[in-house]
Image 1 (tube, rainbow, N blue to C red):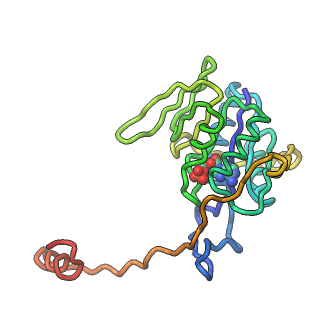
Image 2: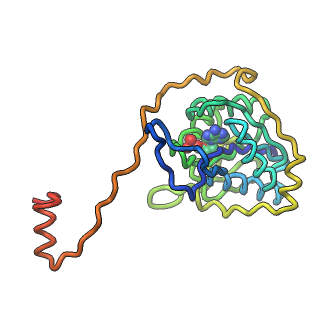
Image 3: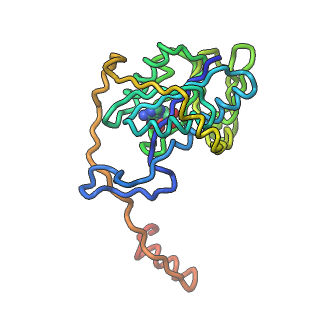
Length: 250
Ligand code: AMP
């Protein structure tokens, strides 16, 4: 069974993001970039399935600038066999990313496509669903457990008020939730080995894809500064402030 894992390069989750000087976008100069945490979970799941003998090959794919090779190399150090970079110079919308992944899937014919449920930069939570739709295949989103058996994949999903388990026919798209697993760290020998694993680069013209945007980002702004809190003496004073200062009760 071949697994394809889509990974995105994003601002590291420890970085406190700031708007750039003209508020046109998030400041990316000199900011630490990493693999999207949900994509790390997807890579870990693929590696665990390979260790169980269920998956025989893991291909990781990223759509982005040349620097996304760093995150692809990290995935190779974590256990992927080879990587594909779809090189683009501008950020893409989820639909364009899904189209790129569809073209790669048409070529690679993976049985299982693992993705993050969401990229922590755009918070879109759209690409997996769009890819499944373009491929016309099954999808299991927000997976907290994945079991492959008898040519099917059982996906337990975290939904409001409980868990839902689906049985998907293959090929299928599965998007990872936080509790699916705890990703490992790459060991130094594996980081060294990853440097000689294959990493191919293609562009969107070669894939024959229209990536023209349908939306335009008009601006970004930081959340309003929170006011300092105050201690009130008693409930009467609290009610008075809620009524006359905050004006949230009448
Ligand atoms: P999103 O729909 O943008 O929240 O992203 C959901 C998931 O789609 C991510 O966790 C990745 O698995 C995949 N994805 C989104 N953008 C990219 C990209 N540029 N390259 C590779 N995978 C991506």
